[in-house]
Image (tube, rainbow, N blue to C red):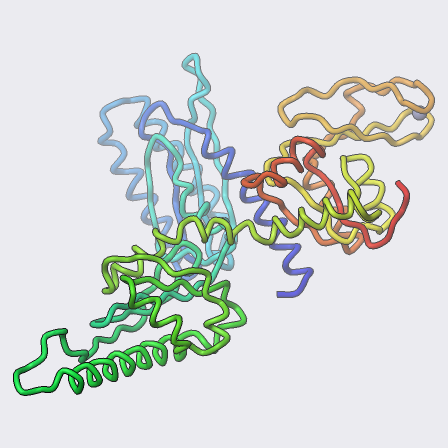
Length: 416
Ligand SMILES: [Zn+2]
């Protein structure tokens, strides 16, 4: 993916996240919020037919309010579908329903999300008191590709962890003899044969993992190994794996089963390591920011300063807290001074006194925009990379609480 495409997809992900947060808060007073997931290859005429069918079945709903609400939602979805000849790339998701505003008041909401980051796999029709947002949320979660290996001396399984999905791929079972030797065999000979068989099996497992993973090693984020002790330790200590895969091992974990279910147990056991890994890049970025802040001169923070540096084209990386929920209000006074103010996205716009000439700008004449949209747009124009920083670690939390959620790593010192 080129840098530009990456920026584009970051922006799109942010837009999706905003809509999803909004949708998640909505409740229907009954089972009346409709969510429809449409894969790219689904014929829209089939979707319309399905919606029409649901509309006629809804006439059986006993509660009049719910019945009307569901039918209105379906009608609204059908109206929206009329704008499309074919489903957009990766498909689309339609949400519609009468949401509860308290005090017996309801509002009709209809949203269409086109071209999600991953293809929609299957058609889903969902009618509930809440909108179905989880499949989209999973797509927006940080992605990773991890190789999985579970083994004991009898069997082994290898596979992938893709995002949050475990994908078993291959298995092997061994001919390693049990610990009990047969009569007539010398103890020494038996022990030697058994070690040989174990060694062969480890080689076979490594071969299986290498076949699966070596080609993808540059796209992978790590390798997880699970099994009982001492098998997994012997396997890793013996350097059976391709050396580049061996270097990517993030940890070994105790897992009781080594069949396919062991792969799932391995991912559960590695939960902590995976969570750490997910924020690793954010951590490194924030380390660099603090280093520049204390010992260098290539850090900037706060909305105004960062914005100024962005305008100068001096920002290499724009750092935005994932939890920043602010709007930027821009005021232009009668003397042509432009000033910006950052406010909570739930707050009302106020009048503003120009700091340069004291002229008052009426709230009605101000322009208001989502702060992240505003900053990303500037970053786009100036070729700055935008990095969203999670608040799930201390320095990430500090970006939001101590630095206003906005900061930047500079290309050169500007003195701003
Ligand atoms: Zn002014």
